[in-house]
Length: 181
Image 1 (cartoon, rainbow, N blue to C red):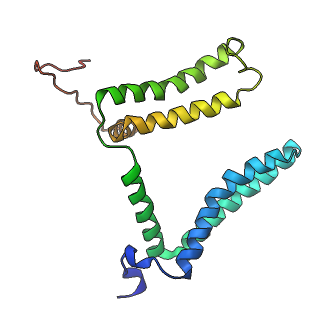
Image 2 (image 1 turned 60 degrees about the horizontal axis):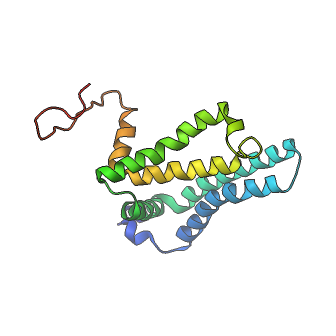
Image 3 (image 1 turned 120 degrees about the vertical axis):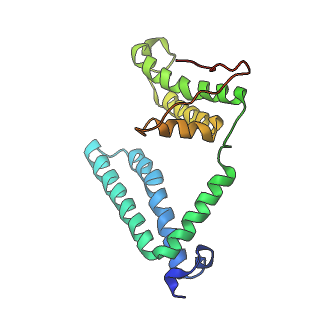
C-alpha cells in the first residue's frame, strides 16, 4: 500500500500535515485579522486597499500551498475532521414548527431591515451616523437564523438553484394539501 492509498485516519502524523494545517489556518486568519489591522492603522485609502489586496492574494496562495503540502491523504484527513465537526455540532436535520418559525423571523428581519434602512435611515436612532453596529448585528442574526432553521432549510435554499427541483407540499390530517398554490 503506497502513501496515496492510506486511509485519511492514518494521515494524522508527520511534518507535512502539521505544516499544511498551520498554512491552512493562516490562510483563513490572515484576512480576518490582517485587513482590520490595516484599516486601523489610518493609512490612506489607496494604501489600505493595496495592502488589503496583497493580504487577500497572500492568503489565497497560502491556502493553495497548504493543499500542496498536505497532499491528497492530508487534505482528505483535514476535510474529514472538519466535516465531522460540522455534522456533530451543526444544525439538526428536522426542527419543530416553533423553532422553524422563530428561525424564519431571525433570517428575514435583517434582510428586511437592510432594505428599509436605506429609505428610513433618519428614523433609526444612530443609523445615519454609524451603521456598522447595525450591519454586524444583522449579520449575526442572519447566521443565527440559518442555524436555528435546521438542515431541511438548507435543502430548500439549495433547490432554488436546481432547475429540476420540484415542490411537494405535506398532506394535512384532512387529506388536502397544507399550502395549495
